[in-house]
Length: 378
Image (cartoon, helix red, strand yellow):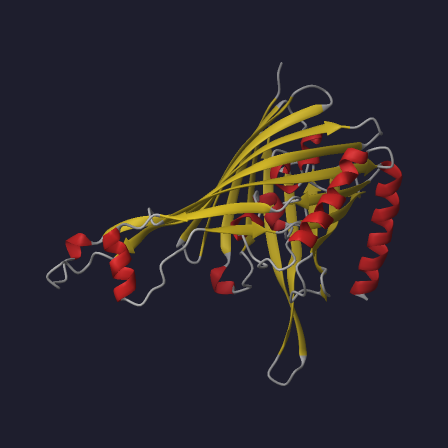
């Protein structure tokens, strides 16, 4: 049943976007870029830069990341660059903090977006995911073979990303498009570092109460160039303890395409709701997701956001569908539920989400808080 719905969804998206984008070659071009990148790196590892797949903003996380069509605020710089054209204020700031793995890892996000004019907007985003205060015991034993805890230091393993986003309304009513450039820095103390660059593009089409959207992430593939920096003493420790010495290498993140459709429902003057279905398409072979094939796999997510007087928001969603088999070979389908609430008071919006980063373990669910500030010129 779900696969039938997905096929109908693809047909509807294709018809609407192809009609709206027939004269917008630059927008539609990212589909071709995705195809080119896939053919060039079909043997690349499936998982890279996974910290950029977690998501930002408690609003979106509470909806199980079903947000590429609903994105209409400063977080659009991450979810769908085209959404920046729908800012309802001249400036927006956002901050988010969450902790994972029982507080071992910290995830932080900050962003700023502003309108350039009535048709365009620009945004800047910063993401950090890191584990701090990791003991460095490579020098625990001195040259004479004695254990000396004063020689133990600490380091951080952290991933950073900076996004610069530009969005613009097209000449077609309701259609907007945007793109961002990502600068990525990953480090493991002083032992190894990497720099990477990538691009995302997105489009949104608003038709009455419907919004149709598409986001192409890492459209030309994102490359991280790793370099190691071990001193001679540390190299000797690695060799003596049977560890492999790290080598300089290039890590590649393959493209993915997210299609989204959203609809707004109005029940009364104060009560309304928005529902969204997203389909994340990956092109690196079979994955343990709801719809899997070679080379395309499809991972759906569904989210809803109910509102009262545009002040109180209740959110929920399901996503991260996983298809596995038990010891008897029986097919098992599991999914991850997410929840969230939000309050908007004048210029301030405070959002909360209960979520995790994909292991579906209740013990590792995290509390995510985010703040958004709207500023409008007088």
